[in-house]
Every structure is written in C-alpha cells, then in structure tokens.
Image (cartoon, rainbow, N blue to C red; front, side):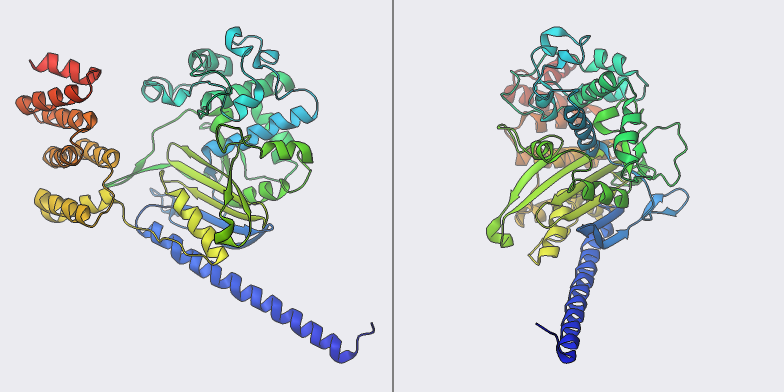
Length: 481
C-alpha cells in the first residue's frame, strides 16, 4: 500500500507519542524506585548502588551513601563492590564452558578431575551435584573456628582443600540440598587442574575480557584497585570497619568484585550463545529435585495470576565481610535488578521484590525500621524502662519479635558494655519464649557476665532442663556449683 504524506506524518506522530509515553512511564518508575530505596537508606539499612535495566537499557540507576566513610568518598556508578557468592554463577559458567569443550563431563565423579582428593568421596560425588549443592559436602564457613582461626590467613588451593574442604559427607549424594562454599572452592581447583591455569586467569580470559567487563576482577587485599569500596559492619551504634578476610579463602565461591554496569554486560551476554551454547544454558537453569537451585542460580516461577503472565526469575545473593549483593533476572522480559551494598546485611529480598513490583505496577511493602533499632532508640531516649515499654508496645501491635533477632540484640548490648540493658532484653526474650533452651542459656551468660552467679545458675539449670544435651549449660553449671 502506498503511503500518502498525511498517513506518513500520522505514523510518525503516533510513533513519537508511543516513545514519549514509554519515556514518561520509565521516568515515573525511576522516581518511584528512588523513593523506595531512599527509605532503606534513611533507616541505615542500605548503602551502595542500585541499577534496574530492561533488555540491557538502564531505566534506573543511583548511588547512595559512601564508598569510604573515613574520607567522605561517595559511591558512584564506577564504585567496585565485592559480590560474594554471586561469584558462583561465574564459576559454574566456566565449568559449563569446559563441558562444552568436552574437557569435563558434568555427571562424572569428582575424582576424574581431582585424583588427589580423598577417593571415598571423590568417586562418589559428581560435578553436577557440586554445582547444585546436592553433593553432601559440608560448608567451611560454618566451621566453629573458621573466623577466629582461619579467615585471616592466606592458603594455597591445595592446602585449604585438605584443611577445610575434606570433611565426611553430610548425606548421601543426590538426596538432599545443602549450600556448600566448600563445593565451589573445589570447583575452582577443578578448573585449574583441567586448564592448567589459575582460576582468576581463566575468569579474565573466558568471561571478563570477551565481555569488556573492565571493572570486574578477582579481589585481593594486596592489589591496588581503583575506586574499590571499603566494607563496613552496620551495628546499632554506627558503622565500623569490617573484619579482615584473606581473599584466598572465598576463592571460586566468592572472590569477585564488580560494578552494577559491568553486571549488565554479564546479564545481556547470557541471553546470547556467546559464552555457552543453548543446550548448556538450559542445563544452567534446570533445578535439582531437592531445591529450586540450578547450576549457580536459584530459579523461581513467579505468580502468573499476579503478574498477568508466567515469569521466570533467576537470581542469586552474595554476602562477604562488609558487603552483600543481589542479582535478579526476569528472563521473559529481560528485566535486571542489581543491588550492591558495602555496609553488610542489607535486606536484599524485600528490596528486589519492591523494585520488581514497581516495574510491573504491582503493590509492594516499603521499608520499616528494624525492631532492634527501635528498641535501641527507646533505650537511648528513656533507659531500660522505655526499652521495656517499647518492647511491650511492639508485642501488642503484633510486630514480630523473633527469638533469634532479640537474642542477637542482647549480645550487641553486651558488646557495647550495656549489661543491665542486655539482661533486660534477655529476660524479655526468655519470658516470651519460655520453652527455648537458648533464651535461658543466653540469659544465664548475661547474669554471669554481670557477676550475678545465683541468677546465672538458675537460668542455666532451666536451659539444661529444656535441652539435656546443652554442653554450654552443663559446663556453666559445673563452674557455678
């Protein structure tokens, strides 16, 4: 059909209107997303960078707070953050690339590639089971003395595997799910063994360089890395420098630093066959029978009734001393949410959910002040009496006063040498959860610290009644009697 000049200009006008409409909507989304994240920042629950993109085009990007508080250096789009366990998806992809090159078989035993690993386990677990955390391998970060004895020391890959990644299996491989940093550390060793290169060099050569991810790399305390954020712990009385962690330890389970913009490049590459072929990409998103965890990714099917169509969300979080991070990808719409935080412990799940729902025009919950923060402010303003009053008020309002959270708050007060307040908090927790051995054990510890042995003994005896296997209560009672 031949277009008349009027029809031509009409088409141009309609196209311009549609573009303007999309621009206005994107602008409104960005404004709402900013207000939403600002709430978390205002409550000191988030400090870092947020980026939302669709089909690789950024629709919202903003930096909040400081990359370095001591020098008043603000976060910017170029700030580099440690991303913790988001590293696992990069490790998984390197394994899949080796599978594509027929250098690794995903369902072959580990011993095929690491013959020096203990044979009873190496011949029993497969590469795929390690990738999807169904191998039965333990988790070295859960070792009791990990932080005090090991976390600050440099180790070679072989040394660390022998030291902390060679425990007995927790269950029969393929029967359960148990998240394992040890497993992904071992995968790093597999990559090095098969390629005869260092893990970080394979990352650079196979992923970062081809994708022009110039602001992403393998972290090291010794290296000078421009615009690297400092990591902080977020406590009740303010920020403190995060504990030191030698980066030889997270290794292939959590050693990467990156920027939000570089992670957009990563996201977009995964929609192509540039890194791995279509069949292996399908396997990368195929979950195990035990859990909604695939190969380096958690996979969720969002409610089709809520969003108007089926949506597949592939995501992963990462936490490492002073940092936590999150990546969420909605496959059908190529919607990407990146959150990078350098004050530890930001509530990534509600933040991601809120940003996603804003994009789709769905209801979402705003930020609320943490319970321990509210109680601490009450203590500061009116002492223990006001703290108790605030606790009772929150309880009457049906605000969740979780046993574990309140217990942690009590220990924070002990660390701040506010013993009387800590005792009050533990007493409230024990009264609310009278059948919990842990609440009474913690109360006993607080009494003992405050040199109140009679009350301490009574609390420990109650803890032992509730849990006859409690070694801490047994030992305390022996000392007190």
